Length: 96
Image (cartoon, rainbow, N blue to C red; front, side, top):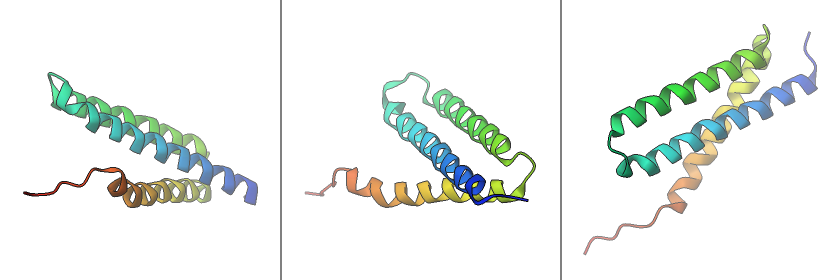
């Protein structure tokens, strides 16, 4: 059986994992022009972010699929927020 508080905690942890994943992606993209081997940075960043998120999902799940679904829902909510906010932060490129 599951408790509503457990699902809320799983949702919040999913949001934290999403913020960590997409924040790491943002930092990686910002550093790409400055590094000598951008492909290596991209791969290391991807595998590190993926490993952290998968370990987080696995630990939150603790054998209950309801917790996993709530964690994934929190992750996807952060993704939606990032997709809507990032275009507002980017400078507008105007063609002459």
